[in-house]
Length: 431
Image (cartoon, rainbow, N blue to C red; front, side):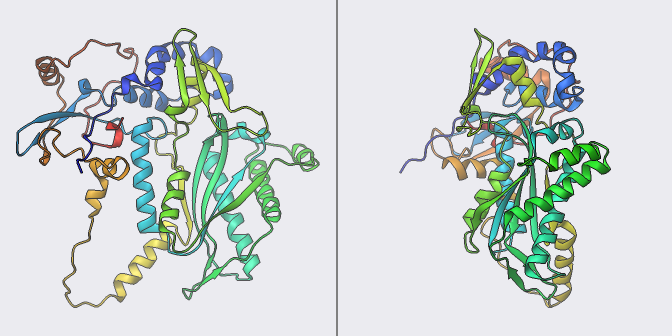
């Protein structure tokens, strides 16, 4: 059976790229007037992510030379922007790496559940203007789960393992802050035993979550006591918890898939259609039971404003680890394991797949598309990276010699100065 030939992607033909390239400069020029009141001040990180994205997969921004050992055939592989929660292909690499790492290094082979915690619409704007509240909301969720699990099991020292992904988007890319929690279906005890949780009344957990979130917002002076009384008088408070997705102890693939799901991108390129003539974007999704719609039509500037709302700040962690899965707990267990290990020298066979290999872009391409980008398309021989090219004058000379240099629409000069690119061949080269 002949393996399919790997074909690097062409990002410039995508609807996302074209909409950003054609209208981002205009978006910046009207931002203060049209969007600042609703979305807050335009953050520097937004501009930085956008400009890097416009150079993602572009040979003119630098590339690696890959050469076949057998027939000496060469190809050029463009650098990636490594943009998280915006560049679909770069973020997809992050999703795959996260799924494998968390399954192999964090999660135990015990039952897990997904808990999805959502907020009333009236509270969501507070998290748009102050993104630090998202981290505090995540801590609220863990405190609720730990307290509720302990009371249900009647185990004061029980500790659940919790991984929380903070998501800011809804099905139609609207701003909708909520939490996806990958949680052990029970608690670990100090003696190492694991107590499985019985079926619970989620409504009681919702009440506890509501209480802690309102207490948080009161403490942060985001809401008043009168407002809290008004909300509590409503028949439906808007707080909701869903926990019907359960992963069995032996289902490793299920844990990996769920981990990938909670880190997914805010949007999908396949669901969007950009119309240059009308300057609009059509975005399709699943049917919304409230609005009775499975699509939304955005003026292109509104589309860009919506997308950039979901870009996290530098250093902002949208995945957090608590309880038995926290960094502190894992570090203690690792230290105890090392202290208990015998001191005699033992010969240990190498793992079947090294961690370095798992991080390589070629591994993830093989994992998803069943094609190896380091297999020569001419002779099927092994290819290897021989050099990295990131000097502008050298890049231009090589591309002009190969007939690959094209004068194209460039981002406005008002963007941040271009920095020297560090090579990171990644999943972003996929179609």
